[in-house]
Image (tube, rainbow, N blue to C red; front, side):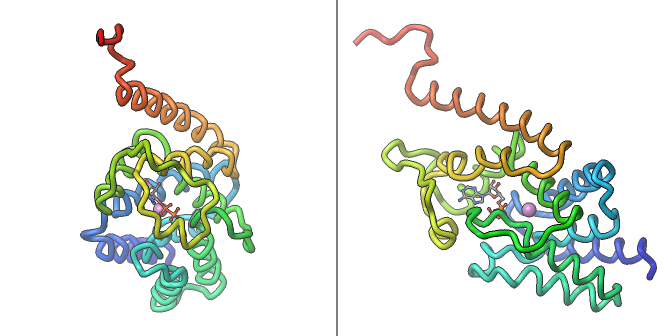
Length: 224
Ligand code: ADP
Ligand code: NI
């Protein structure tokens, strides 16, 4: 098994498949997740080959762009790897990573564990946080035609998986429904550290957003 050739072919496949994807789930997201996963893999002693394949293929067919079909991604990843004659154990492991990486609403009980899944999942979550996380979130909301914010629609912290997927709430609610919860769901020490920094940056952003929305950033209140 020529690992470097397989990685090259996988990169080319994923890049072509993701052409035209929504800006938050495009090839650049995948590349950032791949880079971060490999960075975390060193500390975690995760296998770099499985880690990179898992990261590259993790959003190959995201359920939210495939009618909610959770198996579309793992199926496509496995089929692709088998077409390259990747060792069965590696293909199986990568298929499991793709199956388990998504947050999906956070209700499911995880049924698979590996250090390679842990680093890919942490890398994917890190890309949902911080400045890039903010940019991706508003891009996704725009893509779905959602309001930036609506003070009359409160965040819903108890959504079912289906409600989470089909929610049409304003984009700002997504921070409270998902993004601010992620820092406590990290697996690796390096991931936790970075998540805290990116989390704090988002909190600063949300405070500024709220101040500006309510007009409290004007120094003095405008006389009535
Ligand atoms: P999932 O939670 O469905 O696994 P992803 O991890 O693929 O979602 O989500 C990646 C990014 O897509 C999120 O971090 C966020 O930026 C954006 N996103 C997903 N769902 C929403 C939503 N309902 N509103 C705004 N952004 C969203
Ligand atoms: Ni992703």
